[in-house]
Amino acid sequence: MEKTKELLYRPIIGMELHVELKTESKMFCSCKGDYFGREPNTEVCPVCLGLPGALPYPNSKAIEWCIMLGLALDCDINKESYFERKNYFYPDLPKGYQISQYKKPFCQGGKLILSTDKKIRINRVHQEEDTGKLTHAKDVTLIDFNRSGVPLVEIVTEPDFTSTEEIKEYAEKIQRIVRAIGVSDADMEKGTMRLEPTVNLEIREGEKLFFTPLVELKNINSFRFAKKAVEYEIKRQLEEFRKNRTVKTTGNKTTRGYDEDSDTTFPQREKEEANDYRYFPEPDIPIFYFSNEKIAGLKEKIPELPEERQKRLVEKYGLTTAQATFLGSSKEKASFFEKAVEEARKQLDALKALVTGSTKSNGESQMEIYRLVANWLINSKVDINIISPEQFVKENLERRKIQAFSKEELGALVKRVIDENQKAAGDYTNGKIEALGFLIGRVKGIEKNADAEAIKRTIIELLAEKNN
Ligand code: ZN
Ligand code: MN
Image (cartoon, rainbow, N blue to C red):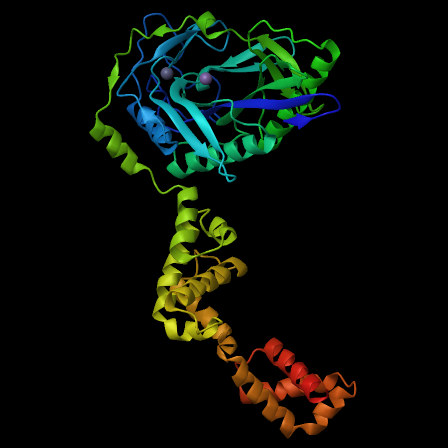
């Protein structure tokens, strides 16, 4: 629990996250799913306009993608599942209800693990449809139904977050997973990914325990704003409690919007409880049954996720977390690295000389080679689309051949040059800095691949020893 002046409190934060799927067509009709930048109300039909008598027919691709997302978040897939009508009145909802899922969503009971090893429980991953888009102009409100009926997946967590860092990390992880599976752009600014954190506080005062009323936050279009909105809301609820000392609650969730200009939240509509939505099964769409084979098949289609890839790079190649995070962030980078490693293996002898501690066991020095290749890739600005992994390894080997000299070899060479150039050595010792450049040049004259930095260091060391 956090402590302020006189109160002990703990934020309780949950997250509802919507992702718009980028299927060809909408959720329950064949209108185009991509509405971005289109003339308003041009991608509509009786189904997505909610005209009487129009019948929905579900998009099987969207359902597969929803289930893949659920599987990626470690959910159980309901073998039997159905859509329900969520009834509420709002102008952007032409039917007067949203086709969503309630009692039997496609996916339930998953989890996501944060970098701190904290587990965020996922209550459900369900399928629904997007609403139309309202634009408030001067005297009128305009409605564009192009977005109406676009497939939407909602991911709902348990209230497991206790800090704003956690919600930010969670949302970023979900975004990476969604993008890796390739089912949505998950772009916060475009609104193809939307976050709605729910916030309240547990407050302890002496023996008494209070819970502030639950607030859902809307209008958030960046990770940063999500953090700020929640931070503000925690402060506001604490202030509110300080003023009243008791908690007034209707038991209902209230909705507040976030205003980025003033960095505050403001009240929106009172949120209806689930029973106000009068959920009931959608009579126009039959029940879905999923076989084990079907689910296993979808699981197979999930590509390696960034987190898994990073974990694999650590385990298989002994990379550091920082290296693995960088190289594992994209499939392309990781596969370039793995091919480069393949190539490096072929050049093992040349490489072995490059890594320090050749006395180490084979396994260990192998790992060092992998880390070396990783560093080459991280530190160089190569365009992996232009250079081949083979060429990349070759060039780096050439460039760094000097390091293949053992310290002793380089030392012997430098010693020889110093002996042969006593005058220059003496000049340097007496403060003539230019003499150093001359000596380095001599060493390079004998071994052109030698690294100037290493030579310089060795000369200085040897001369210091000599004069001691
Ligand atoms: Zn339509
Ligand atoms: Mn929803």
